Image (cartoon, rainbow, N blue to C red):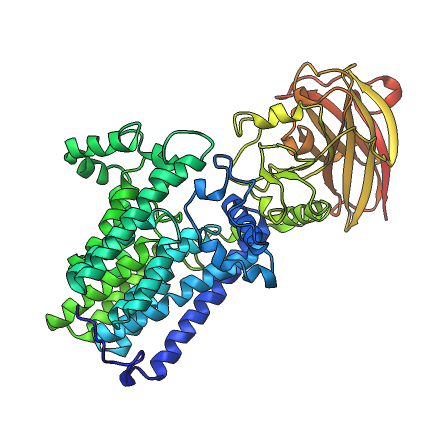
Length: 617
């Protein structure tokens, strides 16, 4: 490829026309759709947002002129010990306007969408066909790995896509100063971009300018050595070398040992590069582009170092398109796709046939792989948190500003614009702990984080102040007795006391029932709570059986003396008018015998306590 240095930035042949309108419409449609999906994912609380929270705090502190500070990174004193990333500094001015994690989601989507512009301009020059170049733009915007990257929280490595794409454009039009600018910006994205930068430098040296290319490679290598070999190990709190080197511990226990092992047995690289999961990963990267990158071997070689870096790791997420790791590879493969199309044009393949091939592959891949609407991986429930999200919103709104807090990983980004915020189970100096074990679909409860929840519940420094639908709010300090609507003192088997209940009508025959439990001593076993509704004839017309707190809080974990709010929803809307009695009791977990309740507590229903009478008119 020879740079055309005499042409203006946008050649006369590339003036605004209907294809410009088509591309602009495609970019706008992408930005609109993925902005909505990204924000809806965040609003629904259905996925981890721990990385979003880290970056939110980093951009927020940078906007306050205190960059690289985060309390959410457990293995580094400052963020540069986790990732050698400087891009958040460039985003800090956005937080002067709207300091909010959704700002990052919108900025990420905009950056990815606008990367289509330089790719289209490169294709215009290389292919000399506006329709075919527009097909390249469409294929990029339909690319499933791009969609997964866009929708998997926010990650700074996503900025590799636009910075490298703009680098290729500057190189194509012979604007070396701009090429250097985008090259430096790409290195600032993340430490692993040193691998991409070294490859880009070799490409420039071979195809464009020898000295400039060698300088780029040397700078990238130096950047990587300083970042991963010197700075990052010194800033980590876990000791040793580069923190993420542990993903290659199967080759050795140090960088030198890993390099020597691979050099001594180079066949291991090939064997592991085609190991389980890797071939499918390569196909998912290449087939949406109709395999065209393989027809431009020089350009495709740019992606090989990054592909090996990911494929040789022991973390399967690295060689899966559903995460963010493939970000640096996407612009490289798009550049190689343009090169593959150019080669087929030289072989005499008609432009219309090439456009049909590329668009057909992109459309089929979208339907088979994409997490966007109409794609097979699309998950509608991910974008609708429903009533659970509304409950979480209520709990989040009740947390005072600036109070140190530890929160669940699907909630923590709501609090990351404060000085001290932590991912549970890290508590540190938190005064509030907010957990969600119903909406966070990817984890359990007592066994999560090595039973950290079990240990935390037993901590006398915190008490459960409120709970609903799997959301728990703990406060530090001396417990405050709850204001119970209907107090009681019902001892159950001498182990647990029913201290009373609250009953709040929600309309349409629905009620929110809160049972206030108090352990008299540590219960002997796990017990299931039953709530039965009987009509005037004594027939059971509704029931709800589960362990306390939506089945998430076993009675064996009740701290003695503490009040436990056990909220349940009663839905009696389908029942006819009449009087209904609500009974409550406990039985042995797994369907065993009921626990005895004193006869004075209830009469008609054995071993059950009559809570109240409801009249439906």
